[in-house]
Image (cartoon, rainbow, N blue to C red):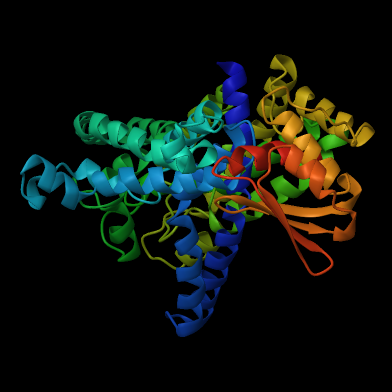
Length: 488
């Protein structure tokens, strides 16, 4: 299980690497808006572009997990994960649930409103399903009359059907969990500073599921009468109280998580430090400036879940301290530097600079706790995965290693490669429904007799560099094996 979580954590690096771009766009938008004092054409363009990426984070994670977990990187994985993701989000939309359950839209459980393109939990689940389907069925050969759908073409089809089953399960489970979280959120409202701390703790723990938005809606909006964000921005409420469910996030986003990133960099293996530095720097900028914390959090959330639990505890502690001493600030987007500076002119903000002092202490706490725990428990945070390091070293030391697969297409693929003039003559191979399309250095080196003896139907040449080998409906399996022999 631990090994699987490490692999899952590594697979999230692909979508996580995209998030800082969105954060920078939003940062530019908010900066321009703050300088001019109002929304404008320029700020709106960058804000919508940035939020457009963040609004698709669930879909990005679906694709990233699928590619990272599957046994081989392949375009069919992206297609399968997209199909599966949209299958679930469509089936579990408010409109669809209303039709499926014969309940009016107004009476559908609001939990289904968070099943959208930004739901990371759905993205991760679908990514795992797509990867499992690829690993299990990408080599499946169907009967002759269905052979067109064999191999990798089968993966998106099966993923769609598996997604329907998952949607049916969630149709009954999701409302129960959502309603329970709403009840829990309303209960901790009466606990004062302790309630704020509990909210911060569970807010972080629920990030992988997307249910943190449920808790946020209780405290930030008007579901339970708190409406912390709007009241703070409008200068309404009670000084030192309004904003308490936002304030404690500033020390975490601006100081705590950047310190965690520094600790992970310092504990990375020497061979990986440069790569880790580039990854962490982008995450630190997005966290500190804009308050988008996911680029850092997802680097260790699954690779080192115990660290994420500590992070959740520290977040809860931060919200508790800020609420206890009535240090308040607020945001419109997230708890980064830009929103902090804007909130300084808000008349209801109370001793906001004390959040910076608190943040400095949290920087120290995060750095030493993360560094100590990573070292003592030998956690596989970015740059500390020995298998990945050895794999890279092996590739660097032996890049020409080539192992021929032991299956029924191995010999055919090998003979086709030889008939095309061997590896050195092949520049690129793709395939369509029945044939291989090849770009060669020199197609006069083609040995048509050898290729046909391998089982190919025919060979055609185009110009000096192009050729096509007609295989039949099982071309996908042959193309996969040729690719394996050429590049593995």
